[in-house]
Structure formats: C-alpha cells, structure tokens
Length: 88
Image (cartoon, rainbow, N blue to C red):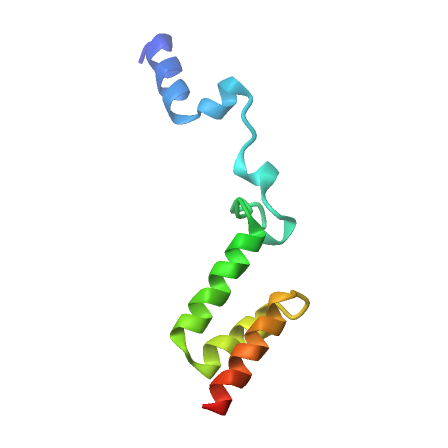
C-alpha cells in the first residue's frame, strides 16, 4: 500500500493521535485498570442505580446497593426504602 493510503487509515482509525485527544486509559479511574472512562456524573449514576433498586422493589436489590456504596449519603435513602418495604 502506498504511504498516502496508510496515512488515511491511521487518521480514520486513531483520530486521537493526530488531535492530541486524551485517550480513555489516561482519564479512567485507577481501579478500572485503564479500561473505561469514569461516568460523566458519578452522583447521577448512583441516583440512577438507587432508583433501579427501588423500582425492583426487592430486599435484595436495596441491600446490594447498601453493600456497594457503604459511605454514600444515598445509603440512608436506601435503608429508609428497605424499612418501608418491611413495614408493608
């Protein structure tokens, strides 16, 4: 293949190399091993996870949320939902 064709392939397959754009491995949280980007809004992701747990309306879903996020303030809301479920 000619050099021009290789350059075209490179530009299409790896635009970040040309623009200097930061790749996922540089932005990803250390605990992911560089394999994924952090969520755009971590708080929104946690609120969404709690909403799904509540929608499931099961003890297991709420307990799983509590176990996964022990230090998060939303855990109190999950505990309240769990208590309300037990009162019914």
